[in-house]
Structures are given as C-alpha cells and as structure tokens.
Image (cartoon, rainbow, N blue to C red; front, top):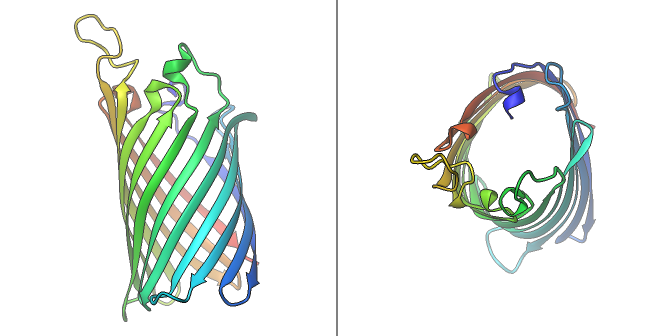
Length: 273
C-alpha cells in the first residue's frame, strides 16, 4: 500500500501451534492441529496481522503398492485479522499421495482447492476489484537425502488457477522452487530455499493505462515474484533452538504499482514440548 511504501519497521512475531495424532492400527492416522501467528509492527500503525489456522488430516498407508505409499486428505480453515479488523477467511481441501521408493528419496503429488473470502470492502466496481476467489493448485515435490553428506535437497513445481469475482484478480500461475538443508559442525542447521512464481492475469487490468488517453483496461497484468529464504539454527538445550533468518522478496510487474522489493532480518527462539 502507498501509505507504507519505503518504510522500515522492526516487528515482533509470536507463533504457537500444536497437533495431536490418533493412530488406528498400523495403516491409518487422524491428525488435528492448530497454528497461530501474530506480527506486531512497531513503526507501521494499524497493520498488525493475526493469523489462525485449524486443520484435520487423515492418512492411510497403502500397503498393497510397493514404495511406501501414503495417501492423505487434509481440510483446513484459516482466519486473518489486520489492524484488529476481520480481513480474510479461507476454507481449504488438500488431497495428496506421497511415495518413498528408497530410504533417501521421497516425492509427493498434491492438489489443493481453497475458497478465499476477503472482508475488506471492494473499491469502485465490484465486478473488477472484488478479491473473493477460488484457488486451485496442482503440484509435486521431491526430496533427496544425499548419502554421507548431511545434505538434503528439495525441488518443487506447481500450477495455480485463481478464479476471482473481480476481473483484476483472476490469474494463472506457475511456481518453481529449489531448497536445501545441511547440518554443519554437528550443531548448526542451515536451510535455504529459492522460489519463483509467474502470474499471468486473465483480463485487462483496470489500472493498465492506454498511452493515447491514459484510460485503463489496456493490457493484462504480468507479475514475477522471487523469494529467497535463509535460516541458521542450533539447539541450546533439549527442545529449545535459537535461530537467525533472512527473507528477501522481489516483485516485478508490467504495472509499476505492483513492483517492489523487501528485506526481512530476524532472530528468535523456538521451544518444542
């Protein structure tokens, strides 16, 4: 948003979560859980973010097929508040199948579908600016544990279809990611991931100007989002880790309004029990 562009801010993030797994014999498992996150921005007024998510997952080990095959179905509900006001509700369903044909290799194929309701009132013509949408994602991810190195490498790809009520917000997208995790000096865990997403919007954008007269709806929006995430952690006692992280985002668009870059530095403590 224009009112917070080019503003640096320190912030405090508090996260909490938990899950319970109920096993039914050797082949079935039911999992229920909750995750919450609160971001308190000290130099940006009225933009604090509170996210809450609950989920339930059923998993079934398919013994009839070789390769340690597990089929699962997860349902979730998410609720987001910004500045204390209700901002978004999300209902999601995610079936997936994972395979582990070797001890050092696994892969997952998944499909996700979510209904997103944005409570912020649309501006102008709702048929153009309304962001309520249905998002479908189909993708795959593979993980390789490189023998005798302590290195784990992952690659992923996904296709995104977002059908929004407003023509400004429907898009088709392609996402690619590469990540790695490695343990150094028997104490430090270093993780990193690079992801790139191409968004091709399906309709001419209301803010895309015609050079002849400045009117909108002249061309469709095209975005490319690149993210880089780096993290170093180490345990300090049983169940307690400290970490430092760096997150970088670069958004490039054929509409200058949606072009930006962001750097986030953080450090914290994680406790598990």
